[in-house]
Image (cartoon, rainbow, N blue to C red):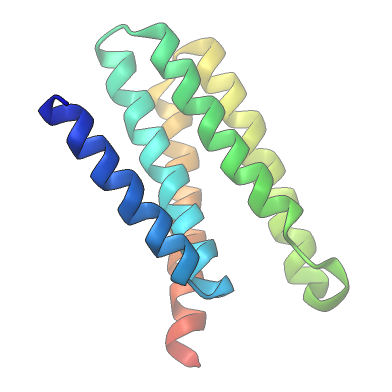
Length: 128
C-alpha cells in the first residue's frame, strides 16, 4: 500500500468514526465543513485546469447541501427553516453556475454563505 493510499484509508476511518459518534448537531457541522472543503478543492482544480475533478468536487458539495436542505424540519423550524431551505437552494444553483462558468467569484460567494451558516450553527451549540 502506498503512502497516499494509507493516508486516504486513515482519513476515511477517522471520518467514519467521527460520523458514527456525532450528535445530530455535530453531523450538520461536519456536513457544512465537508461542503466547504469540496468547494476549496474545486477551486484548486480550477487553478490546475483539472475540469473533471473540479466538477466532481462541486457535485459533492451540491450533494452535501442538498442533504442539508432535505434534513430541514419545516414544521419545527418555521420561518428559519424555510429561509435555510431557500438559501441552500440558491447555493446549489450558484454552484452549478460556478461549474459551468469556471467562476471563482461564485464559488467564493457560496463559501461565504456556508461560512455564515456554519458560524450561526456553532453559536447555537455554544448557547446550549
